[in-house]
Image 1 (cartoon, rainbow, N blue to C red):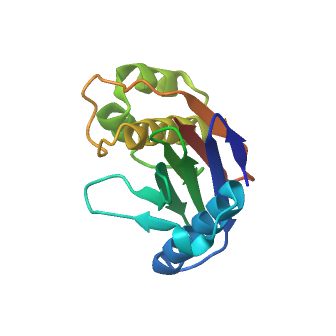
Image 2 (cartoon, rainbow, N blue to C red):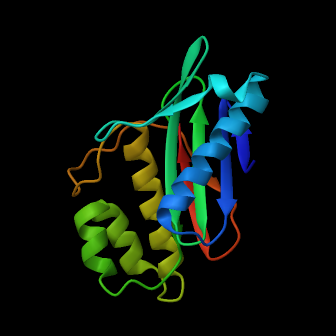
Length: 171
């Protein structure tokens, strides 16, 4: 478990796996964690995943919000008992086209903050801003899209991960 509070549980798996294997393992870990959290049989818990819709965790008597994120070497999942959740993880790294990426997807304010950021700190700042944006969009059930000036209202929590990763939870 990486974080819990307010009816939200975040779990992670650190392993270098092919994406398909990582997806299977984190889904199994979600079911195991939920079974332990709610003290119920794991066979009664299932992950519902429909293209174009946020995944959901189904269990007797309820439905939980669910979000997944993967990067090379790590997979994270957030479970929200009281509503939707969003999670995103990213490896901190130099991105050659960071300015265009920020301008197109993160908006003018974040872009200006990144421009003002010292070069050595920019990869971390960009990863933090990116994971925050992705987590909020996932929480709101929205796809990643170019900046349109809107930011859905969600609570956010930066998650403590070992370098070189950063992650943000939205709920």
